[in-house]
Image (cartoon, rainbow, N blue to C red; front, side):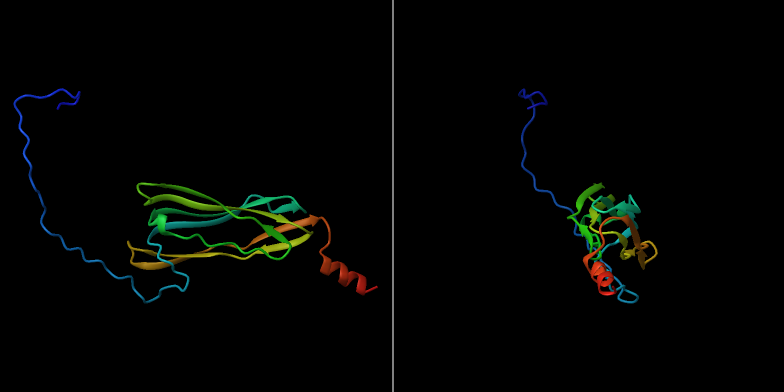
Length: 169
């Protein structure tokens, strides 16, 4: 039948079996030398960022912290590092976004956390690290973010701080 489904005259159907020659692929093992302890299998060329949208908040006001890996490589197989928040800083489940294209070999992946301070004070979210193997230069690379400081100048005092102030009277 042709493209429009009409019967085409003068052709005959032939069953054939086709095969290609065998190919052998040699896969190199990743080097053990200088392998970072936090390496989890990421291979490619990447950038890693940890950013927040607000540095100064009021108690019970929300901010967003974004953990993002972008570049070329095995993005679909990468697990993003998780942030750890100090006591008094509430953290919600992250919103995950996958912006990969070309079968997951380029683009970005990111987690966006919503954080809410309960009390006044300065809160430090520790730095995060991401390690990967760069096949172009055949070396491991580690990118470490800066810690994030959230300043909450107004709001309730934490219970522990109230107890310290009251016991000094």
